Image (cartoon, rainbow, N blue to C red; front, side, top):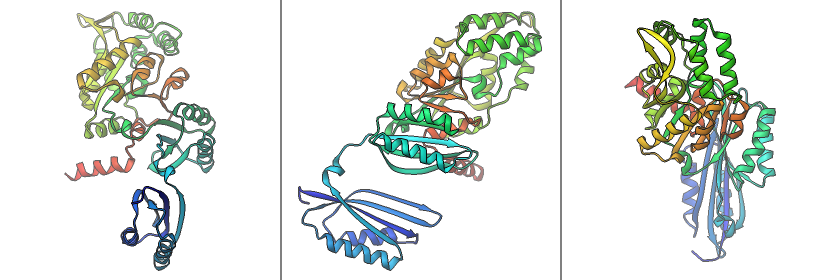
Length: 399
Protein backbone atom coordinates (compact mmCIF):
# COMPACT_ATOMS: atom_id res chain seq x y z
CA UNK A 1 0.00 0.00 0.00
CA UNK A 2 1.40 3.41 -0.97
CA UNK A 3 2.16 5.94 1.75
CA UNK A 4 0.00 8.46 -0.17
CA UNK A 5 -3.62 7.41 0.32
CA UNK A 6 -7.16 8.50 -0.32
CA UNK A 7 -10.34 7.11 1.18
CA UNK A 8 -13.42 5.74 -0.54
CA UNK A 9 -16.82 5.35 1.08
CA UNK A 10 -18.84 2.69 -0.75
CA UNK A 11 -22.53 2.57 0.15
CA UNK A 12 -25.06 -0.01 -1.05
CA UNK A 13 -28.78 0.44 -0.32
CA UNK A 14 -31.79 -1.61 -1.29
CA UNK A 15 -33.73 -4.78 -0.54
CA UNK A 16 -31.72 -7.12 1.68
CA UNK A 17 -30.90 -10.62 0.51
CA UNK A 18 -28.31 -13.28 1.39
CA UNK A 19 -24.82 -12.79 -0.02
CA UNK A 20 -24.72 -9.00 -0.55
CA UNK A 21 -21.82 -8.42 1.84
CA UNK A 22 -19.87 -11.43 0.53
CA UNK A 23 -20.23 -10.37 -3.11
CA UNK A 24 -19.21 -6.76 -2.44
CA UNK A 25 -16.05 -7.72 -0.58
CA UNK A 26 -15.19 -10.36 -3.19
CA UNK A 27 -15.19 -7.62 -5.84
CA UNK A 28 -13.20 -5.24 -3.64
CA UNK A 29 -10.60 -7.96 -2.95
CA UNK A 30 -9.34 -7.60 -6.52
CA UNK A 31 -7.95 -4.13 -5.70
CA UNK A 32 -5.18 -2.74 -3.48
CA UNK A 33 -7.53 -1.63 -0.69
CA UNK A 34 -7.61 -1.71 3.10
CA UNK A 35 -10.84 -1.80 5.11
CA UNK A 36 -11.03 1.06 7.65
CA UNK A 37 -14.64 0.72 8.79
CA UNK A 38 -17.81 -1.25 8.03
CA UNK A 39 -21.40 -0.58 9.08
CA UNK A 40 -24.46 -2.57 8.07
CA UNK A 41 -28.05 -1.92 9.09
CA UNK A 42 -31.24 -3.72 8.06
CA UNK A 43 -34.58 -2.03 8.76
CA UNK A 44 -37.66 -4.04 7.72
CA UNK A 45 -35.78 -5.76 4.95
CA UNK A 46 -34.05 -2.62 3.64
CA UNK A 47 -30.26 -2.84 3.73
CA UNK A 48 -27.78 -0.01 4.17
CA UNK A 49 -24.18 -1.25 3.87
CA UNK A 50 -21.31 1.21 4.15
CA UNK A 51 -17.62 0.38 3.73
CA UNK A 52 -14.82 2.91 4.30
CA UNK A 53 -11.69 1.98 2.38
CA UNK A 54 -8.13 3.29 2.11
CA UNK A 55 -6.45 3.07 -1.29
CA UNK A 56 -3.29 4.46 -2.94
CA UNK A 57 -3.41 7.41 -5.34
CA UNK A 58 -2.50 4.99 -8.10
CA UNK A 59 -5.68 2.91 -7.67
CA UNK A 60 -7.90 2.46 -10.71
CA UNK A 61 -10.91 4.34 -9.33
CA UNK A 62 -12.81 4.08 -12.59
CA UNK A 63 -12.60 0.28 -12.52
CA UNK A 64 -13.64 0.14 -8.85
CA UNK A 65 -16.63 2.38 -9.57
CA UNK A 66 -17.61 0.29 -12.60
CA UNK A 67 -17.46 -2.99 -10.66
CA UNK A 68 -19.45 -1.70 -7.70
CA UNK A 69 -22.09 -0.16 -9.97
CA UNK A 70 -22.40 -3.41 -11.94
CA UNK A 71 -22.82 -5.40 -8.71
CA UNK A 72 -25.50 -3.00 -7.47
CA UNK A 73 -27.38 -3.24 -10.79
CA UNK A 74 -27.25 -7.04 -10.68
CA UNK A 75 -28.65 -7.00 -7.13
CA UNK A 76 -31.29 -4.38 -7.88
CA UNK A 77 -29.69 -1.98 -5.38
CA UNK A 78 -28.32 1.56 -5.43
CA UNK A 79 -24.60 2.28 -5.11
CA UNK A 80 -22.76 5.46 -4.13
CA UNK A 81 -19.00 6.06 -3.94
CA UNK A 82 -17.55 9.20 -2.37
CA UNK A 83 -13.86 10.09 -2.08
CA UNK A 84 -11.98 11.79 0.77
CA UNK A 85 -8.43 12.35 1.99
CA UNK A 86 -6.37 9.95 4.06
CA UNK A 87 -6.09 12.62 6.74
CA UNK A 88 -9.85 12.43 7.29
CA UNK A 89 -9.59 8.70 7.97
CA UNK A 90 -6.70 9.10 10.42
CA UNK A 91 -8.15 12.03 12.34
CA UNK A 92 -8.82 10.98 15.97
CA UNK A 93 -12.46 11.25 16.97
CA UNK A 94 -13.79 11.23 20.52
CA UNK A 95 -17.04 9.28 20.65
CA UNK A 96 -20.13 9.91 22.75
CA UNK A 97 -23.34 7.99 23.31
CA UNK A 98 -26.46 10.17 23.25
CA UNK A 99 -29.39 8.13 24.59
CA UNK A 100 -32.93 9.44 24.06
CA UNK A 101 -36.04 8.01 25.77
CA UNK A 102 -39.60 9.04 25.07
CA UNK A 103 -43.14 7.71 25.08
CA UNK A 104 -43.94 8.38 22.32
CA UNK A 105 -40.76 9.52 20.57
CA UNK A 106 -41.86 11.95 17.87
CA UNK A 107 -40.04 12.98 14.66
CA UNK A 108 -39.58 16.62 15.71
CA UNK A 109 -37.67 15.40 18.78
CA UNK A 110 -35.13 13.54 16.65
CA UNK A 111 -34.87 16.57 14.37
CA UNK A 112 -34.15 18.89 17.31
CA UNK A 113 -31.51 16.61 18.80
CA UNK A 114 -29.79 16.00 15.46
CA UNK A 115 -29.83 19.76 14.84
CA UNK A 116 -28.26 20.48 18.20
CA UNK A 117 -25.52 17.90 17.57
CA UNK A 118 -24.79 19.42 14.16
CA UNK A 119 -24.80 22.96 15.57
CA UNK A 120 -22.00 21.91 17.90
CA UNK A 121 -19.86 20.82 14.96
CA UNK A 122 -20.28 17.12 15.75
CA UNK A 123 -21.23 14.23 13.52
CA UNK A 124 -23.75 11.41 13.99
CA UNK A 125 -21.95 8.19 13.02
CA UNK A 126 -24.66 5.71 13.88
CA UNK A 127 -28.24 5.57 15.17
CA UNK A 128 -29.80 2.46 16.68
CA UNK A 129 -32.87 1.47 18.68
CA UNK A 130 -32.47 -0.05 22.15
CA UNK A 131 -36.15 -0.39 23.07
CA UNK A 132 -39.62 0.13 21.69
CA UNK A 133 -41.58 -0.70 24.88
CA UNK A 134 -42.57 0.36 27.47
CA UNK A 135 -40.65 3.42 26.23
CA UNK A 136 -38.92 4.04 22.93
CA UNK A 137 -35.15 4.40 23.30
CA UNK A 138 -32.90 5.55 20.46
CA UNK A 139 -29.14 5.87 20.76
CA UNK A 140 -26.87 8.11 18.69
CA UNK A 141 -23.14 7.48 18.39
CA UNK A 142 -21.59 10.92 17.99
CA UNK A 143 -18.05 11.99 17.16
CA UNK A 144 -16.30 15.34 17.31
CA UNK A 145 -18.39 16.80 20.14
CA UNK A 146 -17.38 18.50 23.37
CA UNK A 147 -19.05 16.27 26.03
CA UNK A 148 -19.91 18.96 28.56
CA UNK A 149 -21.12 21.47 25.98
CA UNK A 150 -23.34 18.87 24.28
CA UNK A 151 -24.68 17.60 27.62
CA UNK A 152 -25.58 21.14 28.69
CA UNK A 153 -27.22 21.97 25.35
CA UNK A 154 -29.29 18.80 25.24
CA UNK A 155 -30.30 19.11 28.90
CA UNK A 156 -31.89 22.44 28.03
CA UNK A 157 -33.68 20.81 25.10
CA UNK A 158 -34.98 17.76 26.97
CA UNK A 159 -37.56 19.49 29.17
CA UNK A 160 -39.17 21.32 26.27
CA UNK A 161 -39.15 18.20 24.10
CA UNK A 162 -40.66 16.00 26.82
CA UNK A 163 -37.95 13.33 26.59
CA UNK A 164 -34.98 12.11 28.62
CA UNK A 165 -31.54 12.64 27.07
CA UNK A 166 -28.28 11.25 28.44
CA UNK A 167 -24.78 12.03 27.14
CA UNK A 168 -21.84 9.87 28.18
CA UNK A 169 -18.44 8.82 26.83
CA UNK A 170 -18.39 6.03 24.29
CA UNK A 171 -15.92 3.22 23.80
CA UNK A 172 -14.83 1.08 26.73
CA UNK A 173 -16.02 3.53 29.41
CA UNK A 174 -19.60 2.28 29.49
CA UNK A 175 -18.68 -1.38 29.14
CA UNK A 176 -16.43 -1.09 32.19
CA UNK A 177 -19.29 -0.28 34.58
CA UNK A 178 -19.42 -3.05 37.17
CA UNK A 179 -21.24 -1.85 40.31
CA UNK A 180 -24.70 -0.27 40.52
CA UNK A 181 -25.77 1.33 43.81
CA UNK A 182 -29.31 2.63 44.24
CA UNK A 183 -31.23 4.75 46.66
CA UNK A 184 -34.29 2.96 48.05
CA UNK A 185 -37.26 5.22 48.82
CA UNK A 186 -38.86 6.64 45.65
CA UNK A 187 -36.14 4.95 43.58
CA UNK A 188 -35.98 1.17 44.01
CA UNK A 189 -39.32 1.48 45.80
CA UNK A 190 -42.32 3.48 44.68
CA UNK A 191 -42.96 4.44 48.30
CA UNK A 192 -41.31 6.42 51.09
CA UNK A 193 -41.15 3.79 53.83
CA UNK A 194 -40.91 6.38 56.59
CA UNK A 195 -44.12 8.04 55.38
CA UNK A 196 -46.01 4.74 55.45
CA UNK A 197 -44.77 4.07 58.96
CA UNK A 198 -45.78 7.59 59.98
CA UNK A 199 -49.31 7.08 58.71
CA UNK A 200 -49.66 4.06 60.98
CA UNK A 201 -48.27 6.05 63.90
CA UNK A 202 -50.71 8.91 63.26
CA UNK A 203 -47.95 11.40 62.40
CA UNK A 204 -48.23 11.31 58.62
CA UNK A 205 -48.51 15.05 58.03
CA UNK A 206 -45.64 15.97 60.34
CA UNK A 207 -43.27 13.40 58.85
CA UNK A 208 -44.22 14.24 55.26
CA UNK A 209 -43.31 17.89 55.79
CA UNK A 210 -39.94 17.00 57.31
CA UNK A 211 -39.24 14.49 54.51
CA UNK A 212 -40.03 17.00 51.77
CA UNK A 213 -37.87 19.68 53.37
CA UNK A 214 -34.95 17.27 53.74
CA UNK A 215 -35.21 16.07 50.12
CA UNK A 216 -35.17 19.67 48.92
CA UNK A 217 -32.07 20.32 51.00
CA UNK A 218 -33.83 22.90 53.17
CA UNK A 219 -33.07 21.09 56.45
CA UNK A 220 -30.14 18.97 57.55
CA UNK A 221 -31.02 15.38 56.67
CA UNK A 222 -29.63 13.87 59.88
CA UNK A 223 -31.60 16.27 62.04
CA UNK A 224 -34.77 15.70 60.02
CA UNK A 225 -34.31 11.94 60.40
CA UNK A 226 -33.90 12.18 64.17
CA UNK A 227 -37.02 14.33 64.47
CA UNK A 228 -39.08 11.93 62.36
CA UNK A 229 -37.91 8.76 64.08
CA UNK A 230 -38.60 10.28 67.51
CA UNK A 231 -42.30 10.38 66.57
CA UNK A 232 -42.31 6.54 66.40
CA UNK A 233 -41.39 6.04 70.06
CA UNK A 234 -43.59 3.38 71.65
CA UNK A 235 -44.85 1.82 68.40
CA UNK A 236 -45.23 -1.96 68.37
CA UNK A 237 -42.33 -3.47 66.38
CA UNK A 238 -44.91 -5.58 64.51
CA UNK A 239 -45.65 -2.42 62.55
CA UNK A 240 -42.44 -3.09 60.61
CA UNK A 241 -43.81 -6.40 59.31
CA UNK A 242 -46.94 -4.60 58.19
CA UNK A 243 -44.77 -1.97 56.50
CA UNK A 244 -42.87 -4.58 54.49
CA UNK A 245 -46.17 -5.99 53.24
CA UNK A 246 -47.23 -2.59 51.91
CA UNK A 247 -44.03 -1.67 50.05
CA UNK A 248 -44.11 -1.65 46.24
CA UNK A 249 -41.07 -2.15 44.05
CA UNK A 250 -40.60 0.37 41.25
CA UNK A 251 -41.73 -0.94 37.84
CA UNK A 252 -38.80 -2.71 36.23
CA UNK A 253 -36.85 -3.11 39.48
CA UNK A 254 -36.74 -6.91 39.32
CA UNK A 255 -35.83 -6.84 35.62
CA UNK A 256 -33.03 -4.36 36.28
CA UNK A 257 -31.39 -6.33 39.09
CA UNK A 258 -31.92 -9.71 37.42
CA UNK A 259 -30.33 -8.52 34.18
CA UNK A 260 -27.40 -6.78 35.85
CA UNK A 261 -26.56 -9.86 37.90
CA UNK A 262 -26.72 -12.07 34.81
CA UNK A 263 -24.10 -9.80 33.26
CA UNK A 264 -21.81 -10.02 36.27
CA UNK A 265 -22.59 -6.66 37.86
CA UNK A 266 -22.66 -6.20 41.61
CA UNK A 267 -25.82 -4.49 42.89
CA UNK A 268 -26.33 -2.62 46.14
CA UNK A 269 -28.65 -0.24 47.94
CA UNK A 270 -27.86 2.58 50.30
CA UNK A 271 -30.72 4.23 52.15
CA UNK A 272 -31.35 7.03 54.56
CA UNK A 273 -34.30 4.87 55.57
CA UNK A 274 -34.22 1.68 57.57
CA UNK A 275 -32.21 -1.53 57.53
CA UNK A 276 -35.41 -3.46 58.30
CA UNK A 277 -36.47 -2.51 54.73
CA UNK A 278 -33.11 -3.07 53.03
CA UNK A 279 -32.79 -6.49 54.69
CA UNK A 280 -36.05 -7.46 52.97
CA UNK A 281 -34.89 -6.03 49.64
CA UNK A 282 -31.59 -7.89 49.86
CA UNK A 283 -33.40 -11.20 50.32
CA UNK A 284 -36.10 -10.40 47.76
CA UNK A 285 -33.78 -9.29 44.94
CA UNK A 286 -30.51 -11.03 45.78
CA UNK A 287 -28.57 -7.81 46.32
CA UNK A 288 -24.86 -7.91 47.03
CA UNK A 289 -24.61 -4.89 49.33
CA UNK A 290 -26.92 -2.87 51.56
CA UNK A 291 -26.55 -0.07 54.09
CA UNK A 292 -29.23 1.85 55.98
CA UNK A 293 -30.15 3.24 59.37
CA UNK A 294 -31.45 0.78 61.96
CA UNK A 295 -34.52 1.52 64.05
CA UNK A 296 -33.79 0.67 67.69
CA UNK A 297 -36.20 -1.83 69.25
CA UNK A 298 -36.51 -2.59 72.98
CA UNK A 299 -39.07 -4.88 74.59
CA UNK A 300 -40.89 -5.28 71.29
CA UNK A 301 -41.35 -1.55 70.72
CA UNK A 302 -39.59 1.19 68.78
CA UNK A 303 -37.60 3.50 71.05
CA UNK A 304 -37.73 6.51 68.70
CA UNK A 305 -33.97 6.30 68.08
CA UNK A 306 -31.65 4.86 65.44
CA UNK A 307 -28.57 2.82 66.19
CA UNK A 308 -25.25 2.32 64.44
CA UNK A 309 -23.55 4.39 61.78
CA UNK A 310 -25.70 7.22 60.42
CA UNK A 311 -26.47 6.97 56.72
CA UNK A 312 -27.08 10.53 55.55
CA UNK A 313 -25.82 12.44 52.50
CA UNK A 314 -22.08 11.99 53.29
CA UNK A 315 -22.83 8.49 54.52
CA UNK A 316 -24.27 7.46 51.17
CA UNK A 317 -21.11 8.49 49.36
CA UNK A 318 -19.03 6.75 52.01
CA UNK A 319 -20.95 3.50 51.48
CA UNK A 320 -20.60 3.77 47.69
CA UNK A 321 -16.84 3.88 48.19
CA UNK A 322 -17.01 0.99 50.69
CA UNK A 323 -19.04 -1.19 48.31
CA UNK A 324 -16.67 -0.37 45.43
CA UNK A 325 -13.63 -1.31 47.52
CA UNK A 326 -15.28 -4.57 48.56
CA UNK A 327 -16.10 -5.41 44.94
CA UNK A 328 -12.60 -4.43 43.78
CA UNK A 329 -14.10 -1.82 41.45
CA UNK A 330 -12.76 1.74 40.98
CA UNK A 331 -15.28 4.57 41.41
CA UNK A 332 -15.03 5.25 37.67
CA UNK A 333 -16.76 1.88 37.12
CA UNK A 334 -19.69 2.56 39.44
CA UNK A 335 -23.23 3.75 38.76
CA UNK A 336 -25.20 5.63 41.45
CA UNK A 337 -28.96 6.17 41.17
CA UNK A 338 -31.08 8.44 43.35
CA UNK A 339 -33.75 11.11 43.52
CA UNK A 340 -33.13 13.42 46.49
CA UNK A 341 -30.67 15.91 47.94
CA UNK A 342 -29.11 13.25 50.18
CA UNK A 343 -28.07 11.35 47.01
CA UNK A 344 -26.09 14.26 45.55
CA UNK A 345 -22.66 13.28 46.90
CA UNK A 346 -22.79 9.66 45.78
CA UNK A 347 -24.17 10.66 42.36
CA UNK A 348 -21.31 13.13 41.93
CA UNK A 349 -18.70 10.57 43.05
CA UNK A 350 -19.84 7.71 40.79
CA UNK A 351 -18.56 7.06 37.30
CA UNK A 352 -22.15 7.48 36.07
CA UNK A 353 -24.63 9.40 38.22
CA UNK A 354 -28.29 8.89 37.34
CA UNK A 355 -31.14 11.09 38.60
CA UNK A 356 -34.30 8.97 38.66
CA UNK A 357 -37.55 10.98 38.80
CA UNK A 358 -35.47 13.38 40.81
CA UNK A 359 -35.63 16.84 42.31
CA UNK A 360 -34.27 19.67 40.11
CA UNK A 361 -31.07 20.02 42.19
CA UNK A 362 -30.25 16.37 41.54
CA UNK A 363 -30.98 16.51 37.82
CA UNK A 364 -28.59 19.45 37.46
CA UNK A 365 -25.55 17.53 38.77
CA UNK A 366 -26.30 14.04 37.44
CA UNK A 367 -24.69 12.67 34.28
CA UNK A 368 -28.08 11.35 33.14
CA UNK A 369 -31.67 12.02 34.17
CA UNK A 370 -34.63 9.66 33.76
CA UNK A 371 -38.23 10.75 34.25
CA UNK A 372 -39.89 7.52 33.11
CA UNK A 373 -41.44 5.27 35.80
CA UNK A 374 -39.49 2.21 34.67
CA UNK A 375 -36.31 1.65 36.65
CA UNK A 376 -34.97 -0.84 34.12
CA UNK A 377 -34.51 2.06 31.68
CA UNK A 378 -31.13 2.35 33.41
CA UNK A 379 -30.12 -0.68 31.32
CA UNK A 380 -30.35 1.42 28.16
CA UNK A 381 -27.83 3.89 29.57
CA UNK A 382 -25.45 0.91 29.78
CA UNK A 383 -26.11 -0.05 26.15
CA UNK A 384 -28.26 -3.08 27.04
CA UNK A 385 -31.27 -3.36 24.72
CA UNK A 386 -34.79 -4.57 25.52
CA UNK A 387 -34.30 -7.39 23.00
CA UNK A 388 -31.20 -8.53 24.91
CA UNK A 389 -33.19 -8.63 28.15
CA UNK A 390 -36.11 -10.52 26.66
CA UNK A 391 -33.81 -13.00 24.94
CA UNK A 392 -32.02 -13.75 28.21
CA UNK A 393 -35.34 -14.18 30.03
CA UNK A 394 -36.57 -16.57 27.34
CA UNK A 395 -33.36 -18.60 27.51
CA UNK A 396 -33.69 -18.93 31.29
CA UNK A 397 -37.31 -20.09 30.98
CA UNK A 398 -36.38 -22.61 28.31
CA UNK A 399 -33.57 -23.94 30.49
